[in-house]
Length: 248
Image (cartoon, rainbow, N blue to C red):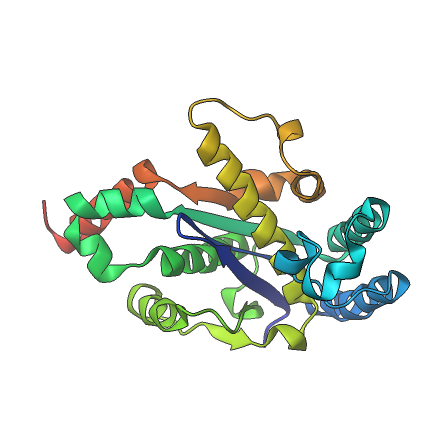
């Protein structure tokens, strides 16, 4: 029976696919659920969905221009994440790099999609974290937010490459998915900025305040468990798969 649970959500566009989320002990998640609702009640806020919150549209339309409320709300949520979660994970796959590598390694597109690669990377990272922490893998459950269009490919690739079937739940079932949505959205945006900057390195202060806050919560997690599958990393994975398959 799982003692820990990881909750993951996805974000992305035509150029970047992201999965991100948090792991915590289950009793901490129980406290998190009620405390997250308390914060929402305090700010009279609907469930967090970053795509609408970031632009103050739909259910967050009345928040437009109220930067003090918006910033205080996110700060409170990020603070709770820091108190209740154990560690975090995030993976971004650069779709244009994936497509370029696929021109030289045709099997890449046959065996993977950028979306599934990002999701499966998080599964692997959680397993490795459990091993490093001396936690039996059987005690760590992982849930993914249900609703992504590319779910079938994700499940198919997880079964083929990892020998497991990902479990899914609705976003409305767990507030923890809202926290995962926050990290996934901000990680997507930070990677957009970094890709646009090219060879020009960005400093932390040039990134959005929410990602700075999330980084500050668990800097060791971010250093070891957040990552980008760029051209070099994807090609390296292709070479390793060919080696295992006995090819050249």
